[in-house]
Structures are given as C-alpha cells and as structure tokens.
Image (tube, rainbow, N blue to C red):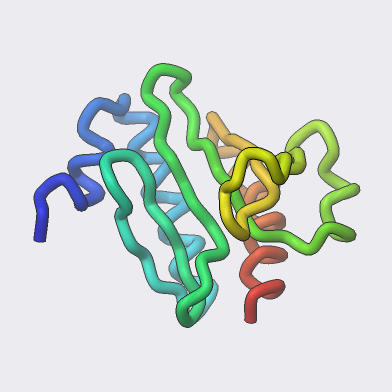
Length: 123
C-alpha cells in the first residue's frame, strides 16, 4: 500500500482536536452497516455502500474543519439550509451533490443526520 493512501497521512498536518473529531465521526459512519472506507489521494476519505460512493470527508487543517460531501436525495435537504448546500453540477463532483462542514463535536449529530440520509439513499 502506498503510504500516502492512509488515514495517518491525510491527518498528518491536522490539529489534535480535528483528528479526534475525524475519528469520532468515522466511528459513527462505519457503524451504519456495510460501509467500506477508502483513502483517496492525499486528502480524501471516501465511504461506499457496495460500489457506490455516498460520502467524502476531507480534513482541512487550514480551516480546522471536516469538509463533507454526500449523495442525498434532492428533496431531503431543505431542512438543513444554512448548514448544508447543494453542489452545482458545474463542479463535476460525480454523484456527490450536497456539502457541509463541521468544526466541533456538537455538530456531529447534525452531520450524522445528513450522512444517514445519504447512506439510505444509496442502499
């Protein structure tokens, strides 16, 4: 395995608090069920159900946040305006169409609501 394709590598420049936030969120994501995790490139951690990517988490050390992009049904995002927003099709991010970010542990449950929607949407 390429050492650059590991969680240790993508978290190498993050603060301890951001690393802890990432690992706490990761535990909750993996506990959803049949979720596979794949570190992609130098910055992203992707999550799949079967072969369908439904979530991408990018630790951003400069902003001290986790930037998250998910595949969510267009009709289910309205409740979270202000927290989450649509990704314009012109960005060409594949099937990931909703983005949001978290900086604190208190935001994990709000994020997990959207992550559960994404997980259910691709099942």
